[in-house]
Length: 618
Image 1 (cartoon, rainbow, N blue to C red):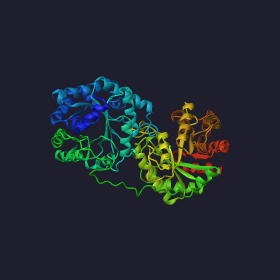
Image 2: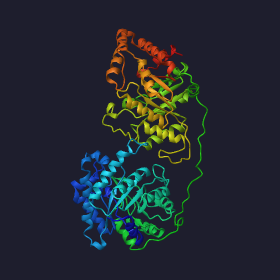
Image 3: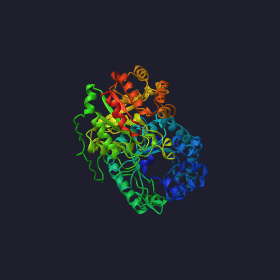
């Protein structure tokens, strides 16, 4: 196994041409993306070996093992999580077998590939750092047992995760050589907002023999990234772009960049100072063969920091833009002054007609309601976008809107896009919820995302309020979200619920809305144990009849209705709605002095019930 210094010496002797894609080549051979390609090391070793051999014949100086996603967390999706050791050992062995056809003095190096875990790390995601580190360690140990020549940590969009991987590797093999590669968006930053030069400095400090970029875009798209990386003194750089952008042809993805184009690019990179070139998605043995022919055995060009053939200008005109803080709404002003506030929840319609709900918002405003809550497809039922309904309401009603934002249906990128779009449309209040699993709803076969949970979303929005992205990097704007969270005072595991509540507050939640309650003692117990430092809006769901009460108590997770109230609803019979309103009024009267406001949830969008409740308390 090479040391860092030995690998750097090889990079200094001549420009190294690595191999090309493995995943898209397997796809071209008829294997589909629905199963882990790494599992083919055990079930279809001949196919993997054949691709490695094609790169050997093309002249590649380095072969990359088919182990990119062979960590426990990724393999779990294909039910292969218990085969981490066998899959990774086979990955190195197959590359070794292919490389052995060349004589020892000209034999390709074998680079053990490690990719991201497939789940974002906390605090942005839900994956605890220690769990992620354990997954990396398990894969690294398996690869070390097969004795590769070096490691290649590739396609990381989160510098923190790349650091964790490198840290784990150096702890297990302190002198082992590795190359660290990040992937970048079209604005020359990682998806998490890291700048190229920051990636280089961080990974050199972590012990990388070479640093660079892979995947991302085609060759030209990496020019700005590589130019900025080259400004870091002493950096040995390696790049492996995709073969352009894919297009769908006859049901299959095709990459359009030709081998000749890659050959021209490889020469240009060698002349600009890169120490290594290769290919990622869509590149084939023909691309590598052309690069080998074009680059030959030339020695790398030594370039001064800051020099180069690229023309790159960083756009600084947008930096420092601050979104102005608008005047507080009535809802904000009342909460700030300690006055009792009222919010009413409306569920978006199951179709495209929102007229009834807009009229309901008008009636609620006239009844003295301070804000409208709009749920995000509760119980995982398909409904109109809450943001669309919010815009329709605000077009006709001057009332604050509290948007529920669920982590169920969108990854972090989608959540950020949704929230920034909401901010641009004037929405400020965001209720961060994890969301009900799809198995509860209309489409039980749908897949939930849950890339982050409510704590991670609170943290992300709080960072946006400070002009930072999800990973703490400066943004060209500062948001002005009012961030709220949910809490359940009747949770079965109340200590855990309180612990999560405190984490939400620490992450930046500014006020909280409780699950519906019916017993004042439940709220008192929660306040005594949790000692909340942010305002609470207590949830109240008026009951319609005895059947409704029975359903909530026995079938809705996390909710409980005292026997006394269930008996009252049963005795009310046809007067169920009136009794439900009376019970809600009594409850609000009992807890009003200890909370900042009430959060009414009229069942089945019967906003008239909310109006009836308010007549007795406002």
